[in-house]
Amino acid sequence: MTISLVTDSTADVPADLVERFGIRVVPAVVVMGGQTYRDGLDMTRDEFYRRLPTIDPLPSTAAPAAGEFEEVYDSLPDGPIISLHLAAAFSGIFNAARIAAQKFGDRVTVVDTGTVSMGIGWQVIAAAESAAGGAPLNAVLALITSVRRRLKMFALLDTLDNLRRGGRISLIRASIGTILQVKPLLDIGEDKLTPVSQERTRRKAQAGLISLVQSFGSLERLAVLYSDNGDLGVELLERLKPQAQTPPLLIQATPALGTHAGTDAVGVALVTV
Image (tube, rainbow, N blue to C red; front, side, top):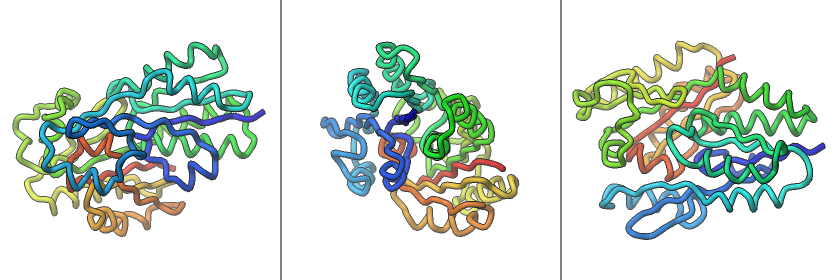
């Protein structure tokens, strides 16, 4: 019995893995300069980040219509479907998938991953590997839960301005006013963003991120993400890759997330052993 995997473009699953495992990816919507783009399809990431600093108002993101998920579910072969998505606390994507899934009864399991980007991606990849190995549905779902419990995700932003302009600043459960002028290091936890540090220089902020990741010791999985500055991502990856038990990933973050993270942002998504 084939288990099909569905996710959305905010998961940042690498294209080669999407192809290898036959994962279906539903694009989020990016509204930029009065135009609507399908995330990952209608605009390259380099073009998005090139335009981001000068766009006013800030680009916004929106969930795909529930009908898009319904079409994808309809097109899949008979058997269970696991649909994993961006945290419901951050977006309406999960709810759109949930509405679409109602037509299919117990066949579709919609998972609120509680996180973003490769935090979603690692759950999707683990599920795809398990399903490809012939694991039954209950075992695949149990593995998703295990990965989620061992998942940690952090983001180092150059500024919180994009979060503020995009109306996402209220997601951060801390006093924000005092840190708007620093390089914020955020813990992207279960459905929430929490400030970890408030360094005033990039060097100190990145040192804090590296130290934090190193405190977890050996890692089952590691991904480093960047927005527009690939050199920052490469530098961070070189410092952290000795901890990874499997080949680490370097990924340019989806515009659906980059619009809120802003330029010169980097992130780490890890799964502990």
